[in-house]
Length: 468
Image (cartoon, rainbow, N blue to C red; front, side, top):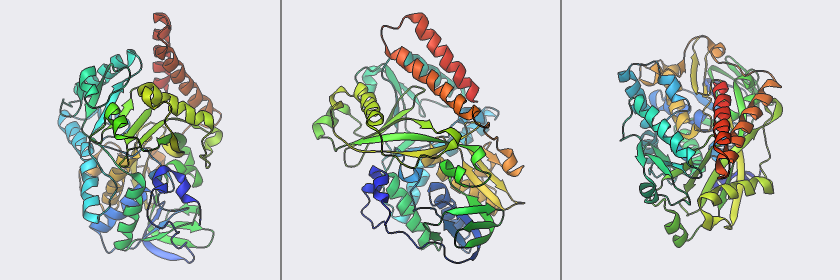
């Protein structure tokens, strides 16, 4: 049996047998063929079956359910989308509020499903804390961010400012300058969710074929080494693995994010840190960090990543000592008492970045192709919305979901913006990331003169603007 437990802490903790499901051995004719048994594929199958139980649906998975980002992520279930500010900017205030309400409801919608299907996945809706935690410029950035949120029609019930003392009531970091709290985030055990969802759709009649890599796909056809599936609809649901499917790799940039987990911490250690209500937390910088307290009292902390030249996927995530120690250094800056704590697990995963740095949910009725992706590391919640939306689009249901600005119903795959060819992608990505690293190092150094701090911020801001 493949060593799937070594994928992540989450897969290692599963009590279930991870023996693979049968592979695709003979040709099939179905209504819907889904490529990938991760969140997007499983949510799409789930909602298709909820609304049209007569549909014949097959999911073809290269490895096992949860092998990709769905079994490796940081466990944040977020009620928002990457780039939502730009996506919603052209809407009227009333429509924008409707869209925000739709997004904010994602954690509760997922909770309704896991309750209905009996999926125990350590769900806790404690909100999220975005912290100014290492240098004063982070406070300025957070306050501008909050003002921008309010200008879009959001209120203090959605996002509110926390003074250093208020922040310390929830999370006690070494150098608090303040923070923002939002209730629209939950934490969970990602692998328990994806594996439970796979069992749920199987109970509904969906067939999942594992260890069946797709060698070719097109409208109406999915082919593996041993068999093929003919279908009315094809749903590629591979996100960071888009490069494995012909034609799709140009639309998704596979970026790696790396995560560590500590050994279970003592009650005294958690009393010193906080997070007693299941809050997620992030240090507010362009170099993304994120963390949560697990149900068994570990600290899971993720930070930063990389891009391989040519969009090559990183298949081995045996983190180097340097990769592990960088993440130890970062959480040690926030929680000095944890600098020498034992790290029990270290892993990573491939996520997908769309060229416009915003998600898309696309449906081409003429070709019978539907896909969602470009979640940019925020896919636990976005994939749920993506699956719901694709189901509504395929079934031509007139819902609020299908009327959103991230929904594309004309132009087929041509409606997506392709990434530039190499070496432009690699050079551009690394230039942007280096500007972010330079900004972070400059601002974190209290001896950096004001002119250098301002220059580093302006350069990083300029490079960030080029991404869009």
